[in-house]
Length: 369
Ligand code: F6R
Image 1: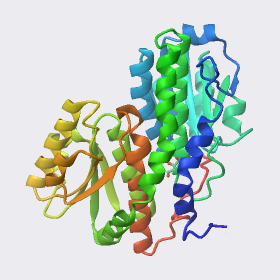
Image 2 (image 1 turned 90 degrees about the vertical axis):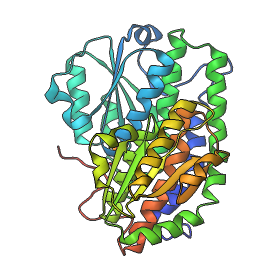
Image 3 (image 1 turned 135 degrees about the horizontal axis):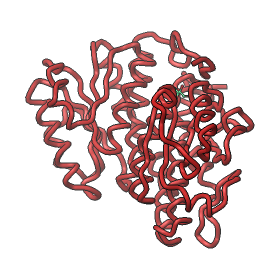
Image 4 (image 1 turned 90 degrees about the horizontal axis):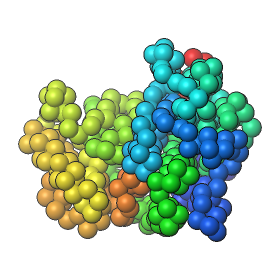
């Protein structure tokens, strides 16, 4: 049932292009409008929204972090992302014009459910992004967008993450369109870019042999650090989470610019640092800043593992290992850059003799707070 793969996780990683395509299927009307699933919110409700909160846990929280960049950029309303387990203790300011987006693969995560209930008590509107039909979180929400990732068996989330990203992009585009900040042709242009990602991802997945070899080589590392900026920052956090979860190894993700404010002293001779480089096409300045950060860590002895876009040949000189990913617009790049990190974590964990699909101390769905 693992379809010839050693682990469900590898099978699910390989299913990602299809999962993205399925999640996009039938979402764009002939008039160029985004079609969501169960939306018991009127367009007027969505026009009245003046603030978005995203609540989620773990990997789904990282998807929410990416969504913040997309929603604020496209919709031009403030969007906050918060760990579901912390949300209600802060006494967040919520009302009828707040949209709370709860992201959950299982739809049963207790922390996320409790955050959702708190939001509803304060009269906020709640929209769920979920992979499990009829589960508790979508049942209790005002609207649902299902990710069509299919069942995820491995405890570590992979295809659910990418489909959560797709769902977040669709919601961002929908909000922008309904509120008149983006025209249908602009929305359609982004959807077209999204529709191209499964093919790019297939190409990327066919070239992962070097990443596997690198994974085996890193199995004895005592720590691995991950850095990124903008949407590359949540990708760095996700890469570190996968590694901790599967390889039982110390790993940490940082906003690339934060390193110099303290954590750079962790870097010693040979410390592996995974660097997520933005596309030079989109935001050249940001890409150059990340490249400077790579040089900074390298000057202190880091072994740099650089994830950069094809054609960005200038980064090669700063990379001990270069992993090239196909071009995607900056906001959509996590759909590419996350994937080598999933494979890296899987490979390191397997090389350490761990059960990749069932890491110790973890359950697939976390129904306690
Ligand atoms: C990590 C992982 C977890 C989940 C988190 C939320 O690989 O799988 O961090 O993402 O427990 O789960 P859901 O999305 O089911 O609410």
